[in-house]
Length: 201
Length: 79
Image (cartoon, rainbow over all chains, first blue to last red; front, side, top):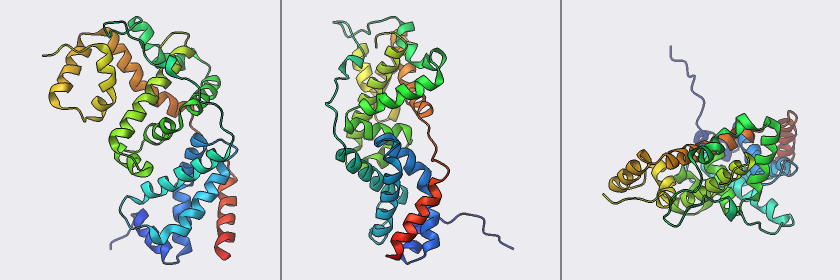
C-alpha cells in the first residue's frame, strides 16, 4: 500500500485555492503567516505588523488567479508582503535620513584597515559583551535606521535567508543590485555592532 | 599576481561569498586574506553580522493572531 505522506506543494495549494478551495487557501495562510509577520515586523513596526499580515493575505487571495508560476509561489507571496509593508511604511511620517557613513570600515591612505585585528573582530563578539535584551533592542533599531532600499534587501536576504535570485525577483531589481545593497547594509550593521562594543568600525 | 589592498578586498566580499567572482579574482582575495590578519578578522565579523542580527531580532507571532487573521479573511471572502 502506498501512503501519501508528502504535504501538497505551495503551487498545488495555490491552484486549488484559485479554483475556490478555501481549505487550500487557509493551508497557505497557516504555512506562511509566521514568516510574513516576521517580515512585516522588520520592514514596518510591531504595531503595524498585524495589519500588514491581514492585508498581505487579502491581496494574495485576490490575486491568486494571476499567479502564473513564473517564480516560486513563496517568492511571489514575499513580493506581495514586501510591497504591502512598504505601503504601510510610506504612509508613516518619515524621519529624516540619518548618515550611517561613519559606520563603514575605515582605511588608511594605502587602503589598509585601520584598527587592530582584535578591534576588527569585535563585532562578532557582541553577544558575549552585551545583555541579550539590550542587543535585541539595538539590533532592531539599527535595521530601522538603514536606508529603505538597503533594509529591504538585507531583511529578505539575511534575515529571511532567501536566495539572492529570489530577493531580486521579489524586489524587481537585478541580482547584482541586491548583492550591492546587502553588502552595504552588512558593512553598516557590522560597524554598528563594533560601536556597540565601544570600538570604531 | 596583483597585490590587493584591504579596501578592494572588502568591496569584493559579498560577491566572493556568493561565489560570483571570476576564479582569478577569487584567488587574489584568498591570497590577500591568508596573509592579512586584519582582513581575516574583518571577514569573520562581516560573516557573523547577519547571523547576529537574525538571532537578536527573532520574533514570533502573538498567539491570538492566527485566529483573528483567519476570522478576518473568512469575513472578507464572504463579502
